[in-house]
Image (cartoon, rainbow, N blue to C red; front, side):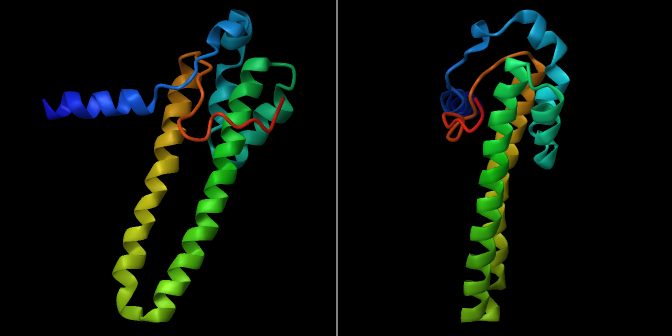
Amino acid sequence: MEQNNLQNKFDEFNNTPDSTSEFDPQDIEQNKVMAVLAYFGILVLVPILGAPNSKFARFHANQGLILLLACVGLGIALYILNVVILAISWRLWGLASILNILWLAPTVLAIIGIVNAASGKAKELPLIGKYKLLK
C-alpha cells in the first residue's frame, strides 16, 4: 500500500502539461537523441546548435537549459550556505554534507526529462518546465 501511495505522489508530481500532439511525429522520431542530450548539462548546446529547425529538440533543449540554469543556481546557493555553516563552526560539517542531498532534485528532473524525450513525449518538467527561454 505504501508503494501505491508513493507511486500516486510521483504521478501527481509529474502531472504536467503534455504537448506531444503539437509536434510532427517524423520530427520526434528523427530528433529523440538530440532531445535526450539536452538533459546532460552543457550538452544542451548539441540540440540547440545541431537541430535548430526541430521543434521537438528545441522543446527539450529549453527544458534542459532551464534545468542547467537551476543546477548552477543550486550549486551557488549550496556553496554559499556551506561556507556560512562551516564559518559558524567546523563541527557543523555533517549538516553541510546533508544539504548536498538537494542535488537529488535536479537529478530526478533530468531522469524524468530523459525518459520523456526517449519515449517521444513533449512533456514539461515538474516545477521548472513552465518557463520558456528558447522559442
